[in-house]
Image (tube, rainbow, N blue to C red; front, top):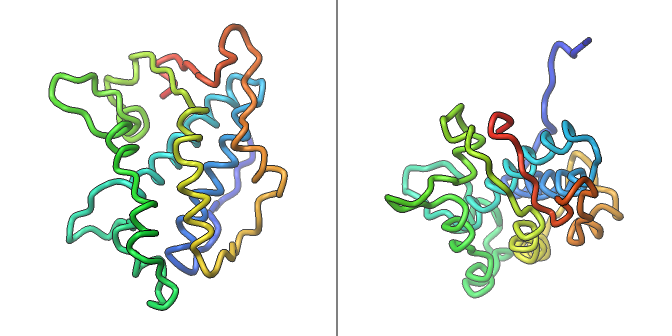
Length: 193
């Protein structure tokens, strides 16, 4: 294997571009989940979960004062020109605390199966099988990210545009055709996440 000496992600000039990158990577990973290879589907599921989690954090997680985490609750970081900032009503439609709560918040006594437990650290949780309904997950956030993109005055992506076909095909993810797992739910052996 001849790996490059260095690798990097594309540069971003604005905070809005950071969120656009997350959206593009989520769409790309969602589209790539249709690949037939198990190894590729495992990799693509991890990529999907990572970018999905980043987006639900941006759109739904309550923020603390001292955090430098980008959030829809700090619109001035995304819309730097006050005259381009959406109204409070428009911004409130982009907030999805329900998704953050559904996928990342757990109460005492609940199964701690949040996304971050499977991705962030090598936890004991990883040996517990988990099915991710990625079709449902994508549908839950699809309208929010589409509305966010509409509200941006500058949608420029220094890394280039996703192929148009990809932009339109992602909302209708095709199921994998292996075995009985044709319902967009992908079950990974615990050790793979």
